[in-house]
Length: 511
Image 1 (cartoon, rainbow, N blue to C red):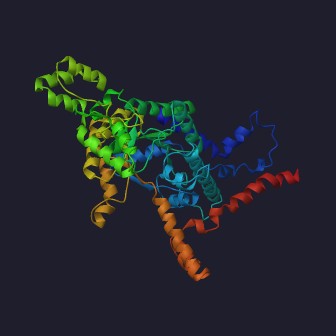
Image 2: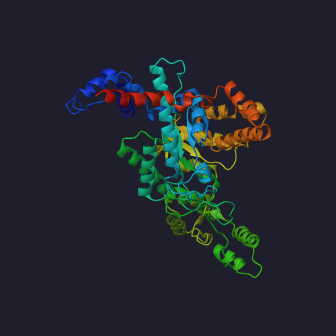
Image 3: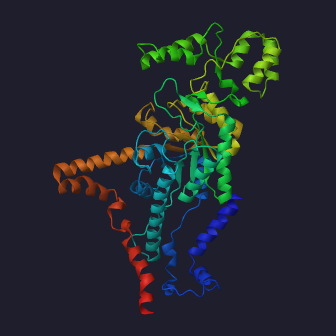
């Protein structure tokens, strides 16, 4: 189906690059009566169209790297200048970061840290801006190619855009509307995570990352795919899990989450976690630190364990084996009843450890991340676990288990960070090392923004200190040496604009 779709799209592109096909179209009954000022301009028509690449291009990129054991490494683009430079440098993908948009470009003009509280058209609007710029420069280059102008290049300006859809921003209909906006904007792929919308917090002890059940994550991915199918889109889906850094989950309803849901095993605790924190908060000398200390003290005394760990400690090996067999694919509530029915005497209370928002305690780790990604195998093209730090052993384990349970050709993604340890050579080759593990797409979300800041600072400082000479020395001279196309007049597209005016006015003025 994918190949067929690609063939249809390629046929469309071929037609638009064929003057004969255009003439045949204009000769149809529906089109022949139109008086076109540019009808004598049939030959150059293709150069105005500009090839809009399909999402199948991105599939080819990932497939190539999977087979070669390499990776497409990219950065986030903040504006059209960055994306154009990345195309010149032949990047294979461009990332569009929600965090970067939150900091610099939201429809409401309210900027700040990435709490994902921006309107859900924020990132699609940035994708649309970058994509339309890509189309323009593809048209400019096609125009130069048609003229056999030596300024034409072999650069493909339609670099696939991979964008941040965060949590999907709501329920199934919201997920679908967000997906629709991304397709219309020109995204080649979007990633979606398993956090709860509206719960992103930074540095709050009582509110770590909050997950939705596995079933809800799958439903989100299904909503995306349904919308893509309705639109006939080949847009790729990247599943992200934040399970490694999670501290809570909204519900215990999914059996797959049971091995990671925590409960108190101390029957002597008279208060719940919420009560303990409330008591600390209402004391005369209450501070954030004292409330945090109260939480830490409660957690330490509660001896938090999973249900299965608790039952294992209380049962004989034989009885525990019977419990595991009978409780397979059961929720914590169902499994707890089964343990009681088997005569196992234990105390375990996941209700006591709930947060004031009602969330359940969750043990986030690499195993829970693997479980969630495996559950999403049939609902996503690429699997990705967001890690709190670069731990090679965890990345190796994740890749090994995904290949084992999902197949050796499953594509993996990874967000690179600045905490990679080692020699310069080891850090330089780190992405290649991950590529061999199967991480075909690797990205530095805010690297483009950082590079832009450093470049502007360098130029602005030179101009402040040396005026025009500073501009010539620190901007234009190194820019020309590096052949930065944005510094030239071709990038502005004046030739294409002049030809467009000629095509729409010359014949009309003679009629």
